[in-house]
Length: 176
Image (cartoon, rainbow, N blue to C red; front, side, top):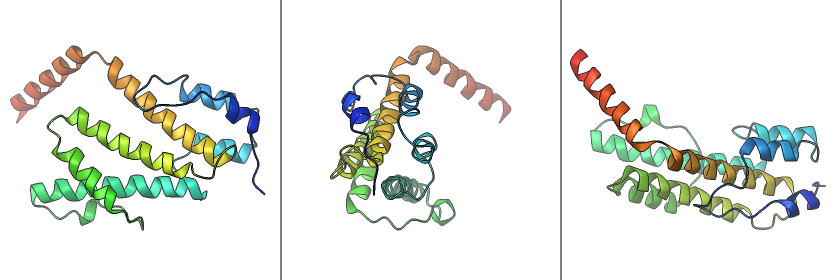
């Protein structure tokens, strides 16, 4: 029988794509640590592996999305994508559509946002039927990680990053 974390889940603020995260992922883990069993906490903390069904669906989707990007980029460079693909069993025609649209976007940043929106949509779909259980906490954790990523991107010093990239590029050209 699954465990329910009614108080914990009810106390979490809603997450909206593109908004500021209400707290850090580490803050979320600190909030969860005393309220859920060790096995559940380990799944939250190391959510890039595990055999929990919701986590598996998330990892399969993300792998399939990355594989589609590999195929698109390999086709453009006219190379065989097979050695770069990771095996998965996830099939969804929407993944290919999302990957192509993101790749074709003239702005790399907008393309990344489109990919994260596709990830967010999947997480929303995975929420169905999960209200106060560990699955919902896993989904919340991944949404929080997406929001944190965009917060880092938005708060980055763009001129300094551009200058650093240009400097590295000119160093590379001098060596080559």
